[in-house]
Image 1 (tube, rainbow, N blue to C red):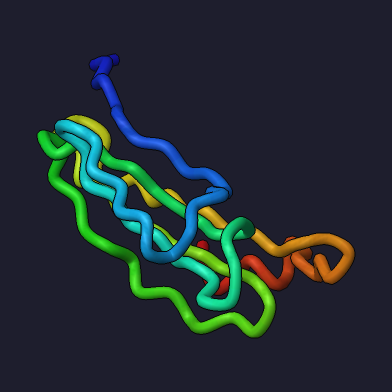
Image 2: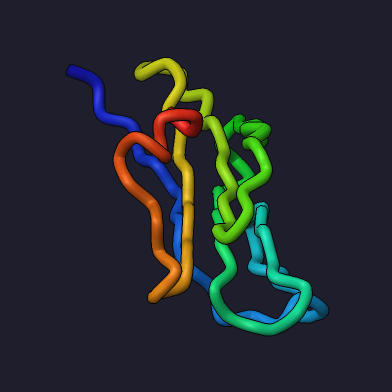
Amino acid sequence: MQRERIGGGNSESQLLPNFPVNLCNFSTYRQDRIDRGGGNAASLVRRNIQHSVIPLPALQSAKAVGASLHLTSLGSLSLTAAYESPPACHLTPQSLMPFL
């Protein structure tokens, strides 16, 4: 089995919408709330990994962003970061199926 080093991450972010994220050697993809900071979703992918953005459906109360990593030995690996603030959290396994 071949091992391939993968550099990427998904997370909730507490960034304000007008705050840029510029990390050396990483591409940043984010979905921000316009009305306030926090509760955003972000993905970071190393620039030396071939990747593309996954178009996701618009959500009413949650934020989500995704990227597909194109890995030479493993094929494609899809990453999705989704966040919905409590107590309004209605994310269920069934509601996440459009992202898979």
